[in-house]
Length: 242
Image (cartoon, rainbow, N blue to C red; front, side, top):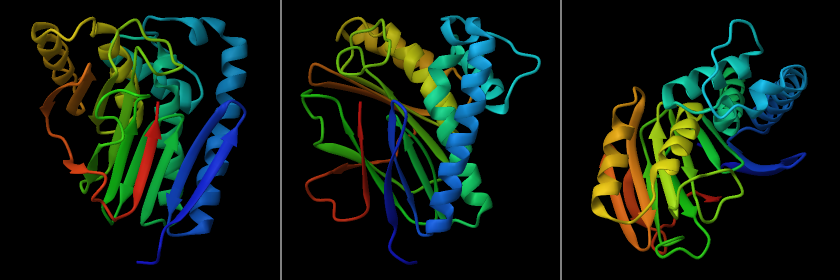
């Protein structure tokens, strides 16, 4: 397979990265991002409760992005906007695959949707937290959605106090919503609190694995991609900054 093309993009306040072996697929992914984001912005203008609700909302008729956000929010018991970045990343990846991409990876505001015929390494940078940028994941099973919430380092709303709660799920929209939900639950580095959060996360259908990083402590459960030392990794790498 040819070398991957990496493109950085900015759409209003959102920055991200797209990886693929084909420029045409990257273009298709960007068009999908802009299209679905535009539809969603119009829907939010007409339905402000959707934009500001912190509780799940069930929708009957809405743009595809809003419907998926609603479903993810109901699974995770959070408002639909908790899934916005992940859902848009999923829709972009779907457009890239439809265009014929063998590698389709979209990082959208820190949340990642990926489908690939080659392994991809992921680094998560959570401010100056201990272990940040030192460990990462070698993803070899696809499709996969990865999302991270932080009560200390992210600009996104969180009621918890973790350095990072990272969720691996069947799609990025679900991972995004669950990361927000579980991130709200992390109040201390005590083992009983971490075990409660990890156990709760694995009860949600579609969640594959979880990682919590707080004060140098790491808690994991479920199926995680292989952990790697980033200083030794020589392959294709995508760094996610929260």
